[in-house]
Image (cartoon, rainbow, N blue to C red; front, side, top):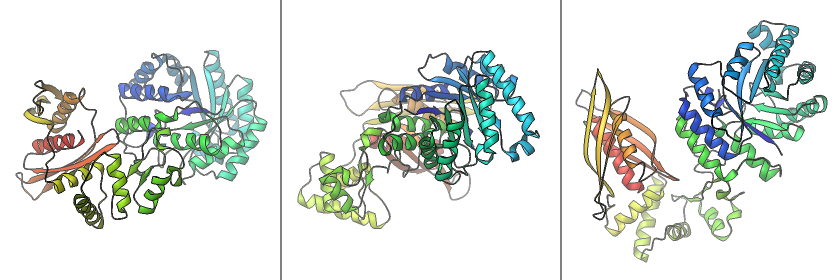
Length: 491
């Protein structure tokens, strides 16, 4: 059994441009605990007052996971971590010649002394200590062994090897962790970065070499090229190496999307395991194989990671794929309608477009001469903004269904009038449809203050994604009407 040390909330949050509020960090921590990770590195307590507030919120939840704070080999860092009531500290000490000489400006002896004093201080206050060597993969191995052994003598519970700039190779990773696990009396962790795209492979090799724990982030986020991806490492261990973890793999996709939404970091469609294209198929020969046996082109069932199979229609699709897709969607067409739909798909495919489920429904409605019925109608929108007022919007939505007489009325604030209006829509629909705004772009068409603006929004409901454009002279109305059109398409 390999333990999973999740550093999404610490190393992951160090992704350029990402900054979470305490409540957002708590929401992610709750999802990670549901996922079944063993340790959550909730942040670095020394960072700021807000960071300490977030860590305290997390430690107050009595989660199953061990809650950890990153600390340097400084008593003040450890004292701030203690203030947050964490279970453990990830005590990081630079060990490479380049880090000691240029960053710390200390000798090996001075670095070792400060590290051991920090271990003693943490253990005296009852903390679990994971003693971590920063830039370990460019460090002298004999020095690593000395550091870890001396730390273990003072009570350090675990030792961690950081491939800080991602220079390991799988072969070297295996040998390094084999050497350390044979010469260090405490469990060894692997913390790998993805600068050369080998973080997953290096982590797996480290575990094969003797590492009993690995540091991972959801979606592989992190500084520069990111960290080892939790979903990739866990599924490779479970499926390819028959090595188990406590992770509930069916929750991987859901957790991925929570992290993506709160950190505003889109998941690439071709991302392994949790990308929207990870189980998507377009080529006719692939779809034909899937119809006969899903294992022909899927190494694992999509539901095992909470994802789903997607049949994509486009220029590579055959008629069998369209028939299969229509069966999955429980849609019946006459032979004539089928041919018209198929030809439209091919024509759009030649223009470089793939056909989403929403697009397919739109094409079918066009062929049948039917329009998409609005389920929810924008009845009233009021937005107030100014230099001495926080932008606020109130909105009233009506159901098109006459059986539903109630109205949805909400008010919300925002950083600007558009944000306030969209927040009001989101609040109004929170109990009706779980729809999230994934992307928003605006550009001016022409010049002048009265120029048209084009708004493009991308909305998600579960696995369904729709992109809508709207052009008007009023940016608020263009944004709201684009969002409303997308909502009706998804519903």
